[in-house]
Image (cartoon, rainbow, N blue to C red):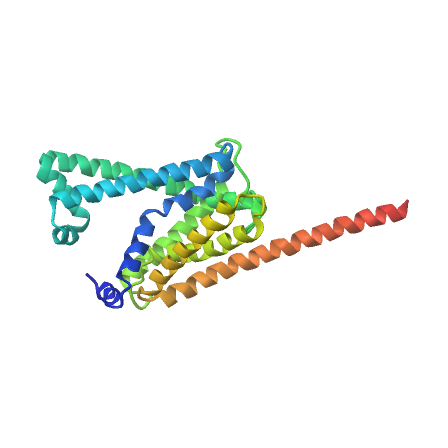
Length: 279
């Protein structure tokens, strides 16, 4: 147990920090949104897949913890960490079963890696497809041979490599201390989600009261709790500054596109007005 965890428990925020770590395990649902432009009837099928998938993941985690708790003591499980489930299976079914379990875990990790790779290569394309982001005309291009957004793939690779350098430097102490950059980005995302939920409450006037007010309000409460948990972690301010810089780049890019669209609309209106006057 680290000093940060001891401090969190002493201040009454241990549960919040635990919830933040749990949120990391469920973060894949937001990654899936990056491929919505390539799905058939995404408005109907994507929410269904996210709900069903999240329920399956929740059931799997509950069964996993129940199984481990039935074989190992809580302290023993905490001391073993990732090796707890292997020891539990070996205790019940023998060494071969423990090895087989690790094979399934590796397959699961490879499947997750495949999904993240797909999301990373499609992320810039998904934004450019809507005419947004940096250089949308470049990242929206798809190769004729493989039907793949090549420049989006390259951009995703560059971002992934840059994040890998940040991750490596984190463990080497390049940033003046250890930042838990596996969970802090999720907290920043949940802070952004609050603005989305407020937007739904304000503008979605054609949906039911439950969908417009109740669901977003509950989501706001949960998101704020995740943000509160992130504030308890070490070097949160350092990471917040980095994220604000990245977000500001995105914000100014969006403002640029909005002003560009407005200027284009004005030119079209002026041409139309000149055409009428010329008659």
